[in-house]
Amino acid sequence: MNLIVILASVLFLIIGVAVGYFIKNAQVQKDLKDKEGKASDIIEKAKADANDIKYKARKEAKEIAKEEKDKFDREVEKKQNEIKNQEREVAKKEATLDRKIEDHEKEVKVLKEKEIEFEVSKKLHEDEIVKLKNKQNEFNDRLGQVAQMTKEEAKNELLKAMEEAARVDFAKELRRIEEETREEAEAKAKRIVGIAIQRFAGEYVGEKTIGTVELPSDDVKGRLIGREGRNIRAFEQICGVDLIIDDTPEVVVISSFNVVRKEIARMVIQKLIADGRIHPAKIEEFHDKSKTELEKQLRDLGEKAQLEIGVHGIHPEILKLIGALNWRTSYTQNQYQHAIEAAFICGAMAAELGMNVKQARRAALLHDIGKVIDASAEGSHAVIGADYAKKYGESPDIVHAIRAHHDDEKPESVLAHLVAASDALSGARPGARKAMMESYVSRLTDIEQIVNSFEGVSKSYAISGGREVRVFVENNQVDDEQTVMLSRDIAKKIEEEMSYPGTIKVTVVRETKAIGIAK
Image (cartoon, rainbow, N blue to C red):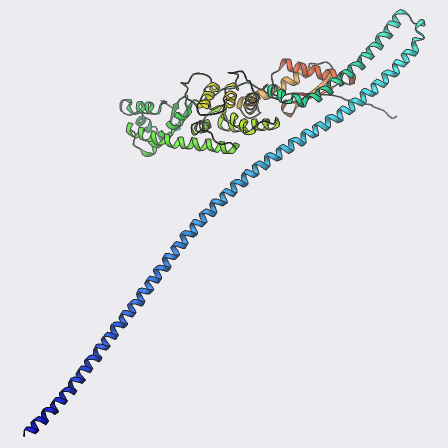
């Protein structure tokens, strides 16, 4: 009995162990499957995270590449702009060089023509000398017959011979003087050009001191005046100008001798109209903004002029004065453009004389800055401008050239003469100023009237802008020898009776006609 119980116990034990093993094994398999599922989830999540990281990395790489590309494009564009600017400078220099070459070729052509004329004149004189020698021989042959002449006939023959001999001597002396003048011309050119070129038209002053601003309606006038005139008083006090409000419809007038203040006041009014709120606080606010804007604009204009003529290192305060010339005119000629034009003319003359071109351009560019300095400063604009240039570090030569360009100081250098000449040339050329065209036409008429007053002149024409006169004479009243004296007499009378820029060439033309009639 006990054995059976023991066997049953052992059997149940074995069965229990087997059942426990199978249960444990099933639990382990289940846990293993759960872990494998979690591992798969982790792997999938890792793959998704890796894809996100990869996508973000690609995106960041593209952004970085785009930024680098934009930066590169900007650099390329900057370099291209620099190259274009350099190309423009080169083109300007090439154009200047072409003009110089063309001018040189013209001068060479003129010299060749003069040489041809001289050779022709020389041949004519030589032929005349031969003729006179033949006449002299004839006279000597006739001296043997003098005993047969009366006293009066002998006297007349002698006087005639002396006259012919005097003509020959005069022609020889004239040719000698012309040759000596041509030989000495190059040595004296600098002094002659520097002093003589200043003989140009005088100064014409007609600056505009008022400006107008158009209003959208006449209601704005009342708002500009303000209650009991407080707005207009504040405006005039802050801007330093006179504001004139009259019956002119939809227009107000700004009056000031200072062109910069006048322009700032105009900008303030435009800002007030655009904003709609007009009171002292806004006037002061817009005045400060307009002043800053205009100062930047003036400096930009000054830098543009400095760059255009090829100089550098001008003080910013002087650059603002150069820019301010843009709002000043003289007989409708814009003074900013006048300064640049005078700079180029002065540089061209300096180049021809072998002087410092940049210094000449700089002096001419600055010669009128005194016109835009406050009118309270004492002295002429030349003196004021020279003092201002000296204050901001310009060289003594340039300061003297500015001060002397209207004879406020006696010119003591070639540069001073060139600046004065370039100023006069820019203002006196036809079309530069409104009054110049009328005086230009009048000058041509006066030249022709002087020429036509001489006996034997049939007609005359002033050409090349009044720098040359062609004179046609009657061939039966004026012979070849008299044309030389006539040209000098006309030139002398023009010098005595007229004031003109440069030189005037007088050319006398004598035409010989031979008419034959066949019957």
